[in-house]
Length: 332
Ligand SMILES: O=P(O)(O)OC[C@H]1O[C@H](O)[C@H](O)[C@@H](O)[C@@H]1O
Image (cartoon, rainbow, N blue to C red; front, side, top):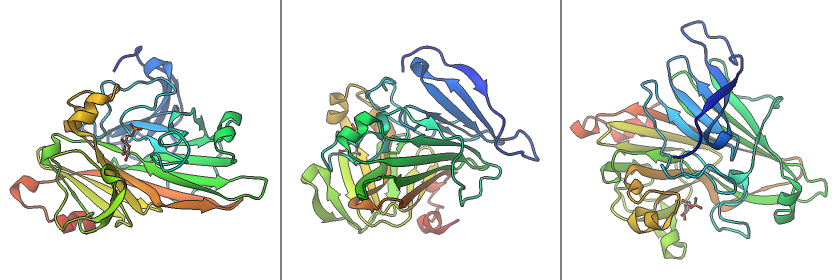
């Protein structure tokens, strides 16, 4: 990754007091190429970084300081290119499912810190969090003729869980509804793609982007990877597990309001064709994206949609065959 050295500019007060050890903190600082970023830190040592450019999570570390998200060494931190890795937000269009540019425009707009968000139903006590907001510019309304408020809360729980909550409201004054598709395009860091399996998507129907979006049904075993994959699994369970045998780590993804899940790895040929992605980096990443793609979300003026993603990383001992996959998927 190139760019100027990161330097800290402002430190804000922690959002809530913690009785033990260091309180959670939220720090505003300058990241790569001087872009503004927010660093969330939790009392036990986990952390996350969020760029206001794209409302984009670029880092999520556990309490041992290990990076859990993949970020390309060739990522370009410069508009209008979206950052390659982390968690790009795809809105108001997923991929090429519409007339906008690939994945819509939220991932390459500058978001603002939302100083006064409407109350959240979820408990944020003991969490480090930041609220961001995106509203369309005049230019945006030329390509997507709608008025909206997109509020994004990114929170880090005391155990290091990363939570993203999106609230999108139709603020059209012309009485018109709008429809959108959406994805949290999460790039997980994995030791070696050939050592990874995904559980929770077996036997589901999917649309295969590599075969003209045709519909197929997945076989009954956990997914493993030996070539390019680009599939949209439909109406999936709310929990999906990504098991990294070599790292002995399992990511558990929980989602709400997002029925679909996209699984993507570009493999060697497509990796080489991407300017902002290293030739061999496909071996160390896997995208599993909580999404609403098959059925677009429609909002009437005044209506709000909520889509939530919760990520946790737990140690697993899959190599010794002790982990019951059902426990991963059904456990708390
Ligand atoms: O290169 P990007 O525009 O970031 O898209 C990267 C990938 O995103 C999703 O996973 C799509 O399903 C893929 O078809 C696409 O290649």
